[in-house]
Length: 295
Image (tube, rainbow, N blue to C red; front, top):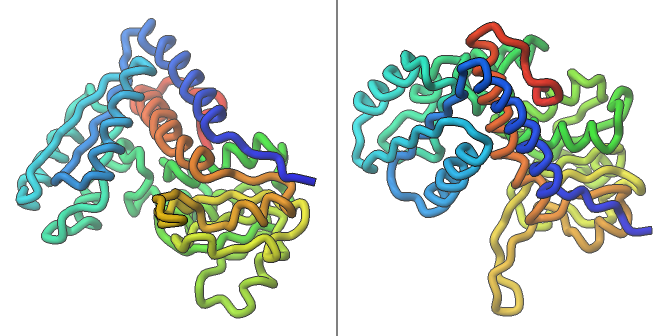
């Protein structure tokens, strides 16, 4: 039996609609959530991503503040801009697009953002709050994965989850979110012994290792839910193609549900960024948080 395809595009559209509805309600109270995005340099992928963020921010009714800086921008000038945005009451969320040019200290830059405005969820204070089960801003990609898993399974309590990948952006926060939802969680990676056996234990298998089609169908527990975070560009039959970290065709024959690449996790990242901005706005003003849009 073929796996159910978890349609990230459709799910993201629903999230954006919910955010837009909440923004409309906030505007009726005289409040407009604002998202500031800072791009340093002209990395092509980052430029596309920032453009999409700005467009979707406006589409849900939020205020968009874009700051495009030269690649040669000094660390002092970038930190001064962030300090200005921290103090700006019209800005409720701040995102500094990564990667930064090599002469800039990414950790220093990210940790200079006001944690309450850190809608990427990368500030060390938010990492610590999430790790101790407290209210925090949550990284967007893991948050999107969690939303789709909750929608598919309902309660996640007691399910065994295996995350392949240990990055600070996806793997580690994904593990914490699933722990907070009472899953039994294993973080695996490229050096895990007998990775195939570890993966085959999973009721929920999250692939976030950055290796094209690393996980074949025979590694998937029959009936498992597979969340493929990977986006890898490869050449096949002389043509460029996007694939995930999971071999989709073989895994889809075994899994109970699976996200495609593209069109799975990817669209949820910006949708959850908008949700986080709406949440940050409410928290800053002591207003009720948007229902269904927080972790």
